[in-house]
Length: 262
Ligand SMILES: [Zn+2]
Image (cartoon, rainbow, N blue to C red; front, side, top):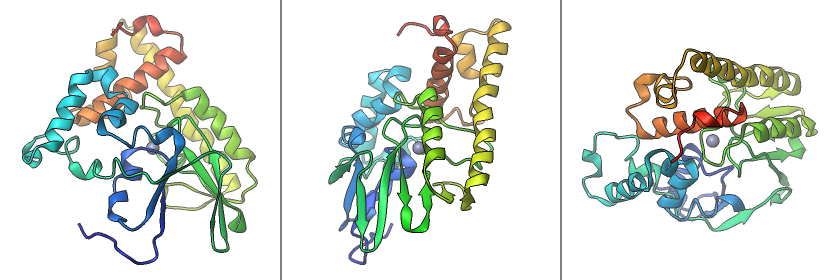
């Protein structure tokens, strides 16, 4: 892939540590990379990155060590699970220049961006308010998705996510733009879609409760495809996210007793 050298890109500001938000930092080789202070550790090593996602809790430390070895190997491309072992996804880890925190202000000439820390999806996740445009960048609060909120990292927290959404609603902004939705939303649209977005969380509670009432045990719940389609379970990361999200729900519903002790 072509590296982006020179040009006008001085800073790359990551909203949180997830693959799809940091993976191509490395292409901006002349830019300073900014990340929230809570992600500094995760972005220093693949081991800590995978731990933060919860890989160790699901597959054990040996899975992470194996991942590191495979990524180091020249034969990486020969491994079957191409998503998990795609080096491009990990190449940017280890290249943080500066950290930021809640309420910090970035100034780019006339433009200003204020950091709004909104933990839940990830503990570090931040949104950015551009007051000159009355625009709030809401990162992964991508309310137009037909999938619902994601909280599949060890650091994710459902209750905190709901609380952060309240903080977003209280921000004085007319327009809302997420990382994944292909549309800028008005405040009304954002607030309306947020309700549908959150309804997935409560539907998932119901689904899990029904399965438990049918007598399903933890391992079966992990395998039934509550969040992701089972056809994607061959990807180790998807299995990790599925399991972690299930654990979050069980804890939230005070059904921890179903989670086997590790
Ligand atoms: Zn994310």
